[in-house]
Length: 233
Image 1 (spheres, rainbow, N blue to C red):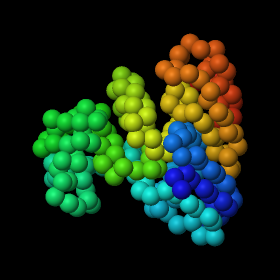
Image 2: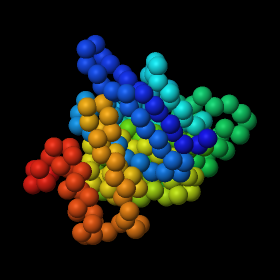
Image 3: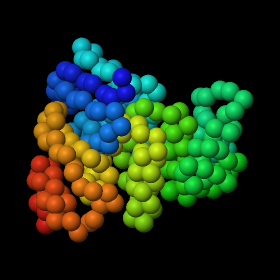
Image 4: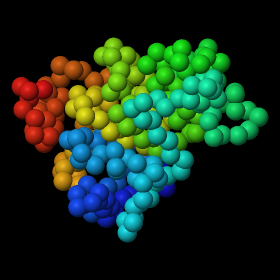
């Protein structure tokens, strides 16, 4: 099994139900984006898939290995880049594996650099390399581009798509950005009141044309599902 299967996932924090008997299946090799208002449970769902949060009474089946890239790169400043990439891994070939992963993200010359010398985009690419070196069958992305400037975000979008095509993990991208979801994913889910309220297939050719009228229609529908007037966006 290399896809995801969730059945009956409920998570509560005190009296507040965040996920309410949620069911979800993700196909192998798929690229799915998850949208939702703040506090809708997106990160809770991602953390459950990553094995960071419990799932009492629910069926949660995920492929192994699974890797997560968070909004912050979470690099250890006292370790050089290559040791951040291979953190927790063992073997005499660890440095070589780190170099291969860093070359894939365009940072092959940064093995011995210190994290504090990296730009925000470079640090996030190191975080991607750290995920890639584990050859994940499920890649979880928790708003990894939110803190980047607009041009760096565009470059990161292209990089993530290239890496997905090369390695073919199932990808779940948590984001607040409707345009980002439509640009990257082939399926977009909207989480509302603890359940999947909208499930949309993005059947647009790649590379995607931002002027395609079908894209505008998808964007409008997703914004409406999120309770946002298109003019406000």
